Image (tube, rainbow, N blue to C red; front, side):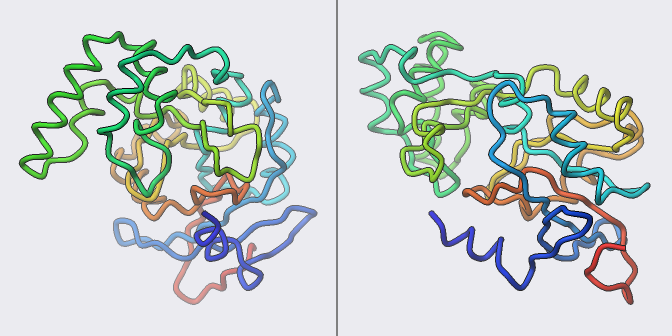
Length: 257
């Protein structure tokens, strides 16, 4: 924890424009086109805030037509208060037992956290979790990973939080679920603010596209994921939940126009 943040948010890449702070994340080539990504710094977004107001505050000073905004699923879920507190999760035998055999991940807290596994049991039921755990154990014998989440689904894979090591105390005892109606969220942002956008659950190992604004219907899922394929938002405590993706030419600078 922390090392990734120093690399992502450093003084050399830090910029400011119109009162907004952002970090240059670098060029990415997608389908032969070059795109610069700018990670926009925000305050710690609390539960119940209005995501339209947050976007207006931080993105409006930097946005230009043609940009695509990539949004972290966590910040939208916090605004929706789609969360679960640890005190409301009653830890049972199976969560304690099965968590001992779960694989630890460098991408964050996984099912080795008993409370997170108990939450998955509460969401999906014990029989499915037992079946997924058995299949996962067999898969590991053949060096196949990810079977557990393939069986239980993206809503379980998207559980975020219960991070005892987070710099933000809120996340020590709070789990954040996937956003509700992600396609509707993106459509509302486009309608109300005019921002083309995508909503993604991303870490350094995997990226799941949860939704996109209607004007991006002609873009493939692979194209949209490739724009943020290196997880420019980061997964530590960067406080950069929004990425402005802007098409660039080879001779253009890293600065905002």
